Length: 112
Ligand code: SF4
Ligand code: SF4
Image 1 (cartoon, rainbow, N blue to C red):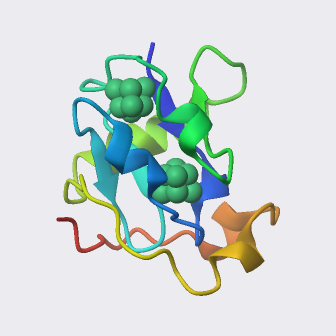
Image 2: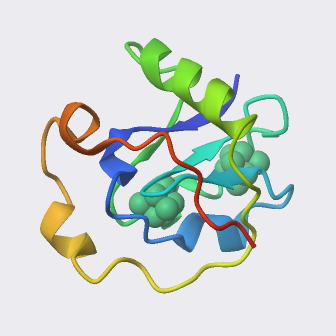
């Protein structure tokens, strides 16, 4: 198994998760992060750190889309291990529905 980042992260990107990951397996897109499933050691410490509740174990049902997205983009986006300021409007997007359809960006973020 692995943990995956879902669309709840899009445009929130609080980055609390990257500070706690013992194996530095978060990767940064323009407006969300993903986890590299083959590097994640399933420790679970990142899950409760996410204010947007965007991180879930892939043992939960219905997460195939996010597992695929995490796998694809963790191979393309830069690694991120230290948090930066979240977007100024992050709280406005917390809990908003359909963020993938409306706001997902395939562009890479800055990384470390
Ligand atoms: S803490 Fe949650 S919202 Fe913030 S970057 Fe990590 S997964 Fe995204
Ligand atoms: S479960 Fe552990 S290893 Fe996997 S992404 Fe979260 S903190 Fe990193």
